[in-house]
Length: 233
Image 1 (cartoon, rainbow, N blue to C red):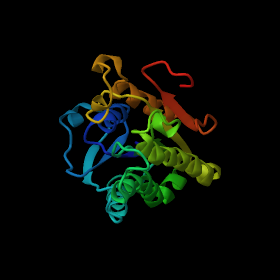
Image 2: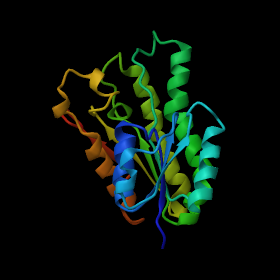
Image 3: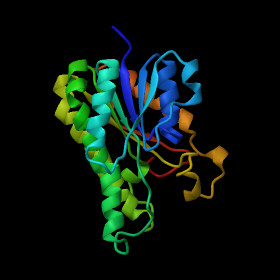
Image 4: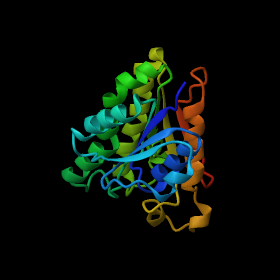
């Protein structure tokens, strides 16, 4: 069996970049979807092949173009990590329709479109893997200000469950990865906690790699990760 291939959206920084490095070090071919594609400096240090491809979550054609290019380069796709996302703070009452539409487009519609584009490859793999990077905000609403974002992440978590049901008989396993505060450019401004007390992107990356490598007989529907104690998570 040759090297397997994973597509990672939002691969230029944060969780996506960390996941790319872990997967490439494990021997996977990695195709990074980025608005401004650039192969990272560390690519020459890993066992797998790393490429970067233009990807815009708001462009309906972008996912199909990316999948077509990755298939031509590597012969097939075995896993998708839908990591690209945006955060807009606001209550569900005060928010504009434009902000609501943007959150749903990037955090829900774009991952669905990407998985759909790669579906035939995931089925052909017999052990296709889908990781939807959701959030603990997709499990509970912590505040009014996070409510708008939470609505989109509840939908993202539901999307992972729906994908798992749609492809289970064909060997596809989907997981909603639900982190709390992460030490990334997006996560740091959301909390007063110091960076050293937050979950590291590298730790999430190792968790994602672990989930992808599990056999079909060990399906994990949701994977919650937190840096602090909460009542339920």
